[in-house]
Image (cartoon, rainbow, N blue to C red):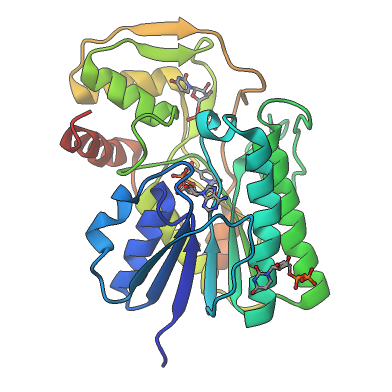
Length: 313
Ligand code: NAD
Ligand code: UDP
Ligand code: UDP
């Protein structure tokens, strides 16, 4: 078989860098396309000399003409701090970026996977969330650039499928954590760990009773690669996440215990439109991909804390 040529947009980011590593390890040629909007080249420095690796600084809102067999389309800021910094650019990235990558896939007949998000369910009124739930999203709020951008990207993926029979795969990713998250990107896992290690108060938004379900990045990457490998008729959307639900207070306690930190918890206002509960129903992923997350939160946090210690936060 010829070497597979895979493009990873957003490959310098947290999840993208892990996918890139795994694709190279299995022998693929990998082209990472990234404009470093919410990352740096640092996540990839250990791969720069790899003979099958190529890195291109490029903004996906502009057209790109190259030849590839598979596209993991991840380019998009993912944490509120980054996606709210330039919300118009966030929507452009999801919408124009997806049109360009779908156009590229149409021309090259490449398979293309979208990293969509649990945010398409908004503040969900159905619990746990199944893929056929249409969501409860505020179209004009401060999270909308991200949520509605991804919803529109999903629409585009399914329309390119219907109009041009593209091989599309849509993954709805739930909160994912692990080594190489940016220490300052504002997400709860990275915030709590860096605050605990620095002996600063943990910033708890609201009363801490809101829930999330945290998936370790290695498990997520397994799911994404399995989804990409499915037959043409498997399009998703498919939820990928860990169905074990925690309150933010429980997460804070666990981080404090595992880091041995004496930090306090400081309660701050809950941001607008912050979802109160979130947990994936992963029956579809179990059936279609034989996939389940394997890493318990405590185990994943160990590796993540170790990473943050090693970079000296
Ligand atoms: P990240 O911010 O670390 O990575 C995103 C990457 O996209 C960054 O390297 C950034 O520079 C790049 N990028 C942004 N705009 C771009 C543009 N216009 N052109 C080229 N590159 C651009 O975030 P992540 O956590 O690795 O997320 C990756 C993908 O997974 C995103 O699409 C995100 O929406 C999705 N996702 C992540 C989570 C999570 O919990 N981490 C949950 C749901 C969905
Ligand atoms: N496109 C791209 N690379 C390609 C092919 C297309 O970036 O290899 C872009 C192109 O600029 C266009 C978009 O993808 O704006 C959508 O392409 P499509 O062929 O679907 O639409 P059209 O070109 O007919 O508008
Ligand atoms: N959160 C918090 N303290 C922080 C950062 C986040 O209490 O320092 C809360 C946030 O309000 C939300 C949850 O933790 O309820 C998860 O936030 P994150 O930004 O990680 O993910 P998302 O809200 O996008 O699921």
